[in-house]
Length: 225
Ligand code: NI
Image (cartoon, rainbow, N blue to C red; front, side, top):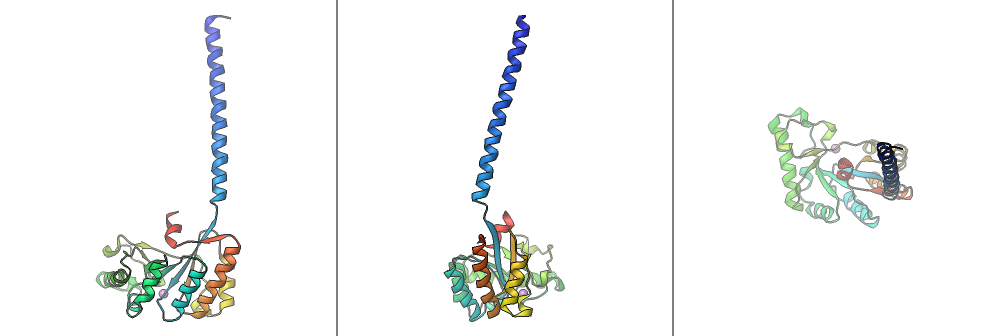
């Protein structure tokens, strides 16, 4: 064999060898990534509560969430904060995420830009005045949102994916059944902590979904991921 032939043969062998090594490496990486995804592969779900804070029911909810070591998200009505500062403080201390649901529970798109901004800034001030934390999330009542609002450029709008219409049925069994029927990994569940039937439903939903391997997170975790 000529010198040139040997060189070509060696180059070929080296190339085959390198490709082989690369494949083994990628294979291993693929396997370890899959294993990581499995161990970190908890099904995530977020419980969100609108229209509070409410005397009695919100307090019971906070107690039950603490017992179950669950973090939830609350979208508060600004005008309801006054007189319930301790409750809102507790909410923040317990690690729940607190967002805005406007000051007077209004349909923002039905207002002038100025009025709508008033609703947003007043609520943010009412909440952060108690918690010391900036309000970054908003669930606009009726899901009606105006993305042109300059006062809200740094706020994130939060929707929902599971709506058992708890405010309508006010029946714990029905609420639980509807949620368990519709829930899946990444679900954002909409409830209202102004009804005892919803609070009791939340506890049953938590206990059942935990047994099914779900982890409860604040809604920001689902929006970023
Ligand atoms: Ni509402």
